[in-house]
Image (cartoon, rainbow over the protein chains, first blue to last red):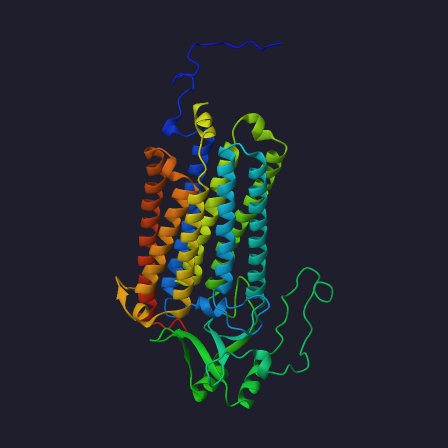
Length: 326
Length: 121
């Protein structure tokens, strides 16, 4: 039975909905406008990052020194290789996506499915890489001392190479037990206790005459300032108040706390986009497999999720530049 | 719909896609190599109070963004109106946001630096 349909005689004409503003279909245009608004969100994050960086322009952490890990290369200084690899992975998954769109234009179902599959795999590899990057960042490598003024003091040897706290400090017997819900007040607890106390670090420092303190201040050559031995000792004894190993939202061993905050928020928000992109791509991949778009007669849906996926890549290009290069 | 049927006779663009991928890869490689080498000429000289190296990074990034938007997101096939509503909206709003926040950040830096009150105590 056919439902009652009122025909106005304008079907296909402008007032009957037959017009496409800007000669784009509704879905595609709305995807574009969503992308524009999302781009503004990301630029808000990046602009805030720029603001904080300009605010601490002479003490901001140097990205090359923070992100210098590469899988299976332990102890090798590999600045940026890993992020460059991640960038390639994402660009390549963008290429397979655009190949899927291209195959969709020619109505080649199996080709679309194959390229969509590759795109999903690329996205998952990228997410895994990001997880590894986060793990390294959170875990930290060297550890540092915090000062009363909220600054970070790091340790270097006479060659200017970073030295980890573990290399010169021996942990004494634990002075106290970590307060957990099970052993103290049941309604509160505290974060993990640092491995060393400030006093242990200072005595370790005094026992090793070839160690120096590196402050966050960036000198004329664009490098972090290294204090003389006497200044180092004085600084440690007068200002050191705590130990920090790795990074969280309130403090990190790399420098200004905001650096870690922006790292978590910007790469996290981007990673969330990649994650949703992978999810949507999987849905579309299965739709391609069961022939939804073959029956519909066109693969515009692949094109629309493709726009989103390329946008995620586009954002990463900017994050890469402003977080790792500049 | 006219839109979809016009695409069924679409010819394959695979060659163009691979060329764009090649350009994107080369540009990224150049960025990484410059970032690792940090040539003295580019680091020690400023233009509009920013290092030449950073200018190069930003210009290359915008070039990559242009390639992705035009070749991968097919902005070149969209109508002029849609293209402008996307590009100019972003360019003006983001440009303004960057301008105002970076100037402000620099101002706060100056205040911290020249203030009589020490903030690193």
